[in-house]
Length: 168
Length: 351
Ligand SMILES: Cc1cc2nc3c(=O)[nH]c(=O)nc-3n(C[C@H](O)[C@H](O)[C@H](O)COP(=O)(O)OP(=O)(O)OC[C@H]3O[C@@H](n4cnc5c(N)ncnc54)[C@H](O)[C@@H]3O)c2cc1C
Ligand code: SF4
Ligand code: SF4
Image 1 (tube, protein in one colour):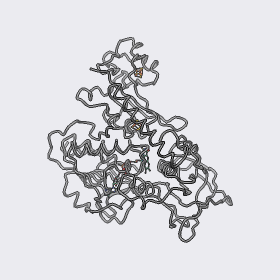
Image 2: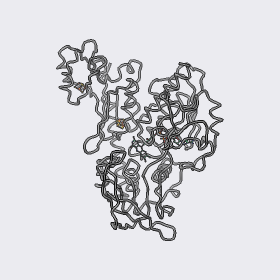
Image 3: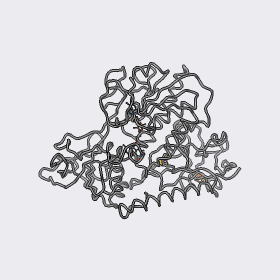
Image 4: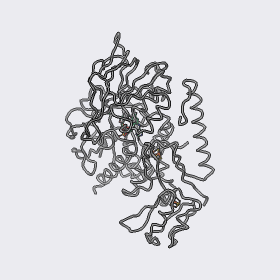
């Protein structure tokens, strides 16, 4: 299968927490994407970015982390020894210790859903369309289309009011 | 351009269970519950008093936050693929008088009769009553609850209302009172529609602003005059129309029950600002689809009381979203809708 990417665009996110909610619902109370509010009050969704050269995969001493055919980086709970080295090296702090199972878990790009032809729930439900899923060229196309819309709106509103900022 | 997939749990309709469910209110709570229920084989009918489904995602939150197509394509999928039946412009009520957002209502359905017709009912009617402070001049022309102000703008943008029913904003001076999502959006929409000057009055400081300092700073950068530690004490009118507002300065005292420091007005610090509109975004109250006793308990803030299954005090009637939790967020309403739908499914199957 072709490489898929799950991309969160932080400039489009409105911090509504819908991604976290649906992820929490399908994982029975434990979301793998969470919104954090920075000191300046900006909401930022944090989740695994399924790195191409994943540091977590390289560092894992028990080879518990692998890539599936869509390019999702996945932790095998049977092989994980819970040493937290993946968390130590992940640039986003994505892996999370599951006390009940005594292993580390994280976003698997909705592996069960992809198996039956569904897409990651966060991207299907985000009201702002800030989360994209698909082949890289599809996702990039969508992002550029959204950006074009932003630019159009900025130009139109600037005839009404000068110096409208960048998010419009 | 894809829509929100409210039925994100499945691709197509499963075998029907033969059970029929009514949902009152097509906001994020009602629509995500509808999505869950159709994915579990139930027939779903959704009633809403507005001309199209979406709730505040379409009729409150500005489109620069949530694109209109995202919501429209979302409910269209529910309708076309999952055969959800929508009853727009239909208010469900029992003893309710005229309420905010009633402009489009063409049919009124009796709440008790609706409950009789279905195997289960979900109430997801949100918080559509705005708090208005009891101050001099509140009845003047040019004073609006923020929800009503934004609702009119969005209704016109969506093509349901003609622009001459929307207060003209181009060249006007607007005072927005409050510092939550609704206040921020009212200020931003005013700027976008060409207001000459936008002021924001908040009784605490930017640090306590519920919308977060980031959003307030963004508005300040765009020229909004931020007046923290002020409260409106009276609105001044001429020939029945707003011409100015009188504010009083405050200082922060001891923390109140919410843990935030209580604003204390400072004697003799009053000042006036000339404005054309005063927009109050100081809170909303839950609006259940009944005003008289229908056997459903509400608490002292007007929120519907539910048990751990999301069931109200009336058997078979469930509730979710802001009408239960008070004004919250889209994501919170979505989760509540999903959890309620899951319980309804269990209850319908007798588990
Ligand atoms: C201006 C504004 C900006 C906001 N911005 C954000 C934001 O940026 N991010 C965020 O996460 N949240 C935001 N929120 C909050 C968010 O919109 C709500 O928390 C969320 O929509 C609640 O969902 P709900 O389904 O419970 O109710 P609602 O979305 O309010 O939907 C309730 C529906 O019930 C219908 N209804 C009510 N009474 C009846 C009746 N008697 N009969 C039939 N139908 C009825 C209404 O027409 C409405 O469609 C904002 C809210 C406002 C007002
Ligand atoms: S659902 Fe989308 S807009 Fe909402 S918090 Fe998540 S990424 Fe941001
Ligand atoms: S867990 Fe961290 S390092 Fe590993 S793939 Fe995800 S984002 Fe990259």
